[in-house]
Image (cartoon, rainbow, N blue to C red; front, side, top):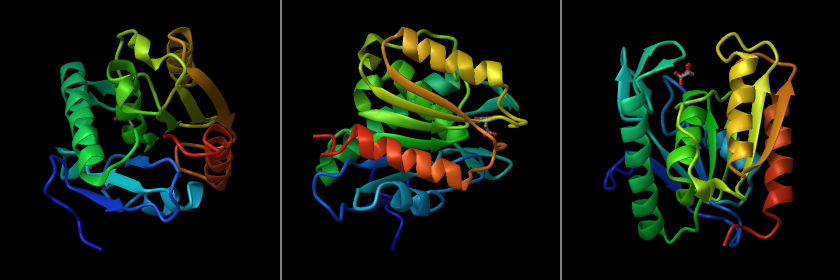
Length: 212
Ligand code: MLT
């Protein structure tokens, strides 16, 4: 398997093994890369195409999807710019690979950039599963988020994402009309077996016949 460099983000692309399954856009956490979430993607969406870009920002050598000033304190101008760049990449990849709008599956920093995409450019996604997400921007979500399925999985003992912050993200998306399913799992920030089983069941229920 090779990392593909032609489009605007380094990425991996795995074609669908089963036609009609929704493509997944995999967005890694801080210090991850385009390989990190491939096993998760295969586990929650067997047969789906997987599109997995690497974040372009480096923090002490660790890839991320946007700059932060401190843990949980984001450079909002950079969040907006990077979300728009990622939206452009999604459009390029959809054309290059002939994909339907993907469902984002993001973890931690990847969940936060997916939430920023939902707020700024919801038309680029069919929906999103946000694992350990927090509010990326104070802006109200764009109206096109209405009707989009969004799963938010928080950790009850997450030391990075305050419960109030995740609840605020769920509330903002819900107010804008997204179909939000917010669950708090008895875990911390790290991914757990429960994340896999809940996300898999949510995808199967929301997209029994694919996204197109
Ligand atoms: C972020 O910076 O996006 C969040 O603090 C999550 C993280 O990457 O640690």
